[in-house]
Length: 329
Ligand code: PBG
Image (cartoon, rainbow, N blue to C red):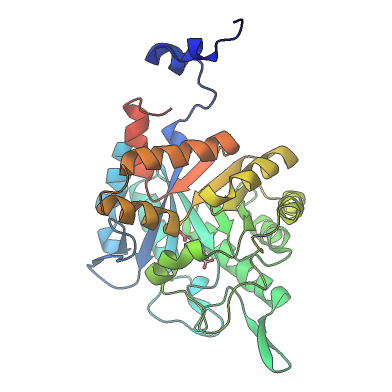
């Protein structure tokens, strides 16, 4: 026998030496929910171990993440009042604007990314302004662009380090880039959720953010999960419009898409392991059916192996610990 692939697997040292995928905790992003109100931390039922924080109670969590070596967070806001045009998304004293300025003032070393989308702020729960198309309502793409521009600029003014549009409107990356540049934020990067599928894996998030659509679904703007080439089209369009980073979402069921986008573009690819992925691992682990830590590690490494440079996950702290302990990485 000439070829014995097992040779390179014979000791832990050798296995580590020939690893093809290297991971560093600096590539992790932790998603966090902040809400209006005072002095409250509420657990999210469908996401055990994840909470919604009022701005006056976020400090301990931010410090915990920094200590674990996770120096990037993505903020999602939960406003007290919602209206048709989602005005709290771009209000100067909105929940995200206050949370960002608080965190950036107190912890400048934390890289704060803000989700730019209307669904948490609109009374109807859709990701944009509505228009009437005959008998039914639809999301008005071009009117929504103005709202997204205002939202992104208000985040940057509050101190956001990077904006992440997740609404899936056409042309929004260019619109946001123009608005940021006009306001002097030429160096604020855009991480575009360019490839966001219409997915049932977002279920727990919608409970956490109270953002489930009041009627209909998101299929007219988020992508159909039967499609692969469409992902390349979306990614290339967003790069042309000025996206600095392209995100693919969800992660684990879309590893083929991560690889396609990695091959088709020359920007860093981020994979978002969404709420349903976390909830499934938690639930199976709580029943004693799987080894939580081992499965978490395997899912994360799979995303990096597929081509992700950045990994967003509710398990960011636990993964950082596994990387430090040399379990993965
Ligand atoms: C929209 C948004 C969603 C998620 C991130 N940004 C929900 C949706 O599109 O309905 C889902 C994230 C997750 O499930 O963890 N603002």
